[in-house]
Image 1 (cartoon, one colour):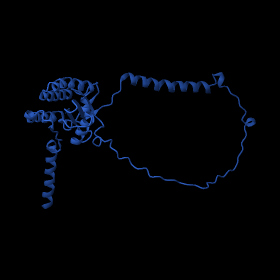
Image 2 (cartoon, rainbow, N blue to C red):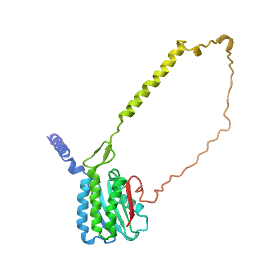
Image 3 (cartoon, one colour):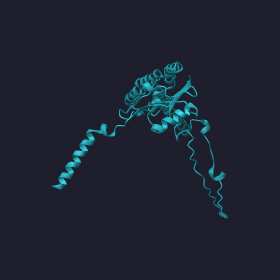
Image 4 (cartoon, rainbow, N blue to C red):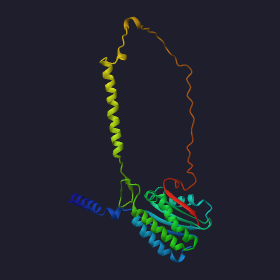
Amino acid sequence: MRKKIIILSLFILTLILMTLPKQIFAETFTGLIDDQANLVMNEKNNLENQANVLAQEIKASVFVVTTETNNEKPGPFAKSYLASKIGAGQNGVVLLIDMGQREVYLWGTGNMEFYLTQSRINSALDDIQPNLTNQTYTQAIVDYFEHVQSAVRDGVPGGRKYSVNEETGKITFYHQFKIEYVAFAAFIALIIPGLFAWSIQRRYQMKDSSAKVRYNLNQNSQLNLTNQQDLLVNRFVTTRHIPRNNNSGGFGGGGMSGGSGGGRSF
């Protein structure tokens, strides 16, 4: 009886896991307004709500960071900031507003690397930059949200075939073969073996005059056999330890790798 109860409990638990995969395994994406320069104090909560809604839609964390004290170049700072929040190469995007250096930088990783092409980044900065110059910082952030949302909704450009995981946002590309490349490869695959077979056939059928070679093997050949022994003397093996290079490059332990972004002054 006890054994039947255990088996029944395991069966029910398995059914629950199978019917509720989204609630248990779905990844959570967040939005964060890190307003260190106090540019949008009155609108911070509203903007953070918008960032969270956008993050769930695009399956990527959405960040805004403002600063007056950054001493790094804006690009490396934005990249290391995003990597420190979500990990290198994960789905995310950040807008850096550097008031000290008067520069803005937009950077995305993971799935956002494919959506945020250079032309789309430039288009976003075209709208964001004037608002920063005019000190309408809230509108600049709203424009940033709108351009990121539009980029994801428009999809990956370039005509490449791909699929998007609805839960994680991961993009999987499919390999494509253009018909002209396939036809050319098939032509080469047929013509080269054909030419080789044709040349061999002509040569062995002696239709080619240059192939008619007469050679007296008994009169013109000679075989000499010798016995030789090589001795290995004074063998030495030298070993040396090569230390591992653990230098991460100085930008957040991998935050510099794999992404798409750009910036400009304001």
